[in-house]
Length: 334
Ligand SMILES: NC(=O)c1ccc[n+]([C@@H]2O[C@H](COP(=O)([O-])OP(=O)(O)OC[C@H]3O[C@@H](n4cnc5c(N)ncnc54)[C@H](OP(=O)(O)O)[C@@H]3O)[C@@H](O)[C@H]2O)c1
Image (cartoon, rainbow, N blue to C red; front, side, top):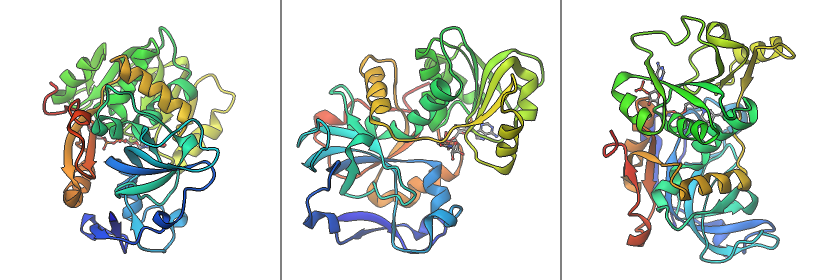
């Protein structure tokens, strides 16, 4: 089968599309597993960090490695105790491993870490959701306990996690202030943001603003900077697991103002909730661009710019035309 692999840590040029031996093809999926024919995958900053060797402690020195954690595809075989899934089900999810591998024609996944794709959602829109939207959901609902009336600031609101965070915070009933560069303000408002701030011209943390939750999606601010703008019992949630983050968390255990870290987990129940929001038209995938699989180096370079509006998606194989029509591109959005 065709798959994207790399044989050393490094820049996007280490990535290549190859015909690889598919060890799983010869064996049935194991207990709790599904075999999936992949139609689309999406990339995340995690792909870049792992490919550059930033997490060598966890990823080691065994090569070749695969690329990608997010996927959307069709079940072709079910292992024992693989939930209620059946062959031909359309599923999406994120593989919960350090080594990626969803940029491949076939993958084997854990059934408990995926969910069915609603009929109204195309492959590309579905592939954009799992890692980024689950991060936003778990940060806002589980870590920060956002609910009706919560005042939320989202810093880094126009990227992969941020575009989902705006919509999920609104679905939870929050008042949302989105922080992005000004060209992306219209996009943030279209997704439901009540207010927008341009971090290039004014600091969202300069004054007491009484936010209940500050979600530092981009992760370049600190709890110390953010706390002035936080409510006295507010929560600052970051995506970046730095030494500073762990110190702030330790210092604020039991304190009224809290620093916290989100660490995304792939859960079938969360994906099913996100699928429901998408089916109801309350969650849209903003797609910066869809790349063909042989353009994987360009797709990875785009993620490295840190200027991606929404998500970068890879088309893994030709799609049945009725399943790819619904994609909303960032270029089409304001
Ligand atoms: N802990 C976890 O479990 C977890 C899970 C997912 C992601 N993450 C991390 O979360 C971060 C964001 O992920 P992502 O997928 O949203 O990334 P992304 O899509 O690459 O983010 C791109 C966005 O960042 C914004 N940006 C660029 N420079 C900025 C700055 N100086 N200040 C504020 N915003 C800026 C850009 O908006 P403008 O052009 O409008 O500035 C752009 O829209 C990454 O570091 C990722 O590794 C962690």
